[in-house]
Amino acid sequence: MRLNNIIGLGLVLSTLLLAGCAGKTYDRAACSNEIDAAWKELNFAEAEGLAGTVSYSKALALLTTAKTQQQFEKFASCKHKAKRARFYISESRAGR
Image (cartoon, rainbow, N blue to C red; front, top):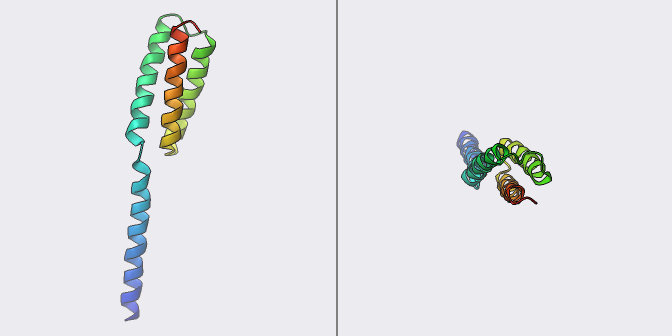
């Protein structure tokens, strides 16, 4: 009877561990898509000669932070920072 309890407890703990890992996938795709789009926009802005603007620098810093947060599986924050970076890229292209 004691062995059955130990096996049951092991199965419950394994299930909880796997469920916890699976929970980190929310916003993963959105984070990745936002970062990819922002890098493309940033490269285009650089090709247009806007790399020296303040907005461009802010966008680059936000994208770097977003990529770091993606690596640490902080997907919601990553997505938010990548969206803000895209805003600053558009500001840079508008000359602000």
